Amino acid sequence: MSRMVYADHAATTPLSPTAKQAMADFWDKRFGNPSSLYYLGQEAKDDLEAARAEIAQCLNARPSEVLFTSGGTESDNWALKGAAELRRGQGKHIITTSIEHHAILHSAQWLEKQGLEVTYLPVDAGGRVSPSDVEKAIRPDTILISVMAANNEIGTIEPIEEIGAIVKAHNVLFHVDAVQAVGHIPVDVKAWNVDMLSFSGHKFYGPAGIGGLFLRHGLRLPPLVHGGGQEWGLRSGTEPVVLAVGMAAALKESVEEMAVESKRLSALRDRVLDGLSDIPSSRVTGDRECRLPGTASLTFEGIEGEALLLHLDAKGIQASSGSACSSASLDPSHVLLSIGLPHEVAHGSLRLSLGRGTTEQDVDYILEIVPQVVSYLRELSPVWDKKAQKPIWRS
Ligand code: PLP
Image (cartoon, rainbow, N blue to C red; front, side, top):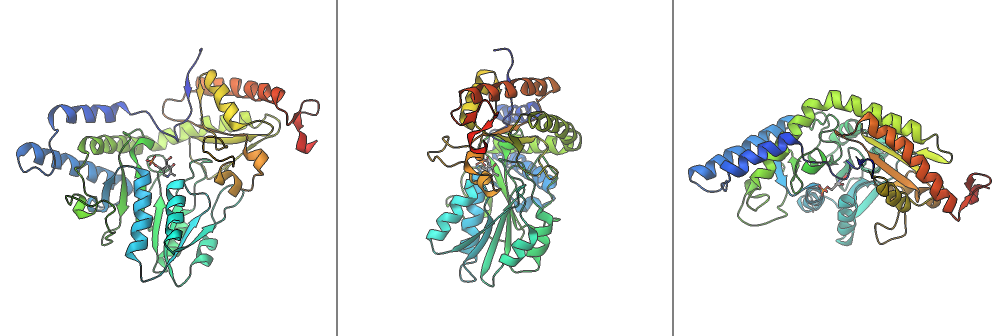
């Protein structure tokens, strides 16, 4: 294999050397349990609190507003289920969007089974939620609004600050799934007026297995995990200090590098989008302007995303697709259907998410290989009209 190009940073990122070093120092010398009263434990407690303070600063939060969890999925589950429980008696209506991650959608569906009502807002062709749609959906019994900051499949960035301003005028909790945003675009819990915000370490070059939930001061969610009373009694279990230290170091570094790195990545991403959208019967998915710096997503008619991934993998390019088969269902991604793509188009989707290690040469390679693989698969495709060079449903 001539070259390896990792283009799936939205799935997970490699651990940054800075985070790794911070963790190595901890493993070796400061491994105590933060609940222990002797020196080693208190040192670990100091490390945990320093990590919390660092993360809080990156989000413009107070340290006491940052709770450690196992990752984005747990934070999302906690926010939705906790808010529903906290506001039980005040209402039973939740508003979210049709393009959320399954951690939100499946939690919302579970709450529906418990008797809550959920409005799933539509998005426009670029995947943007309209703030006025949010406002129109608010009912007297609405208790929670949950909107993602940036979509994991198409990279669209949502108008969170505008939505936050609307929510502020109502007595409704506002949760933001910022798993794809934190460490990549500026996140400010105060300016956004959020009550809860989810993030996850392995999405910004920190370790996997740790994430967090910002919980606005004064808001006491019911615990999702009961036990020894850690995290102010809200999330029990011995704190993974080493992971917290690694996540904090990774986030600090990502925030410090953000201005320069997002400019560099946006230019690489646009090269990918411009180059690959020259392929006939292709289209860019997601908003062209309001877009995560590293996320390039497209569809290619007449082929299957899964086949594309396997052939790209054989050429050393690791990417992702929102198409079927990776789940047990034959339906393409709910996100691609929500932005109005027909099934047959959504089946040929590709997400290339670039990151810190991506170089101009990697992009050259992507621009060389993807068109070759697309035309190879179209040659084999029963739904591709080789003469007309378009899918049979357009012939
Ligand atoms: N929310 C979004 C938008 C995501 O992209 C992901 C992961 O891909 C999650 C939540 C779940 O995060 P985790 O993998 O940390 O559980």
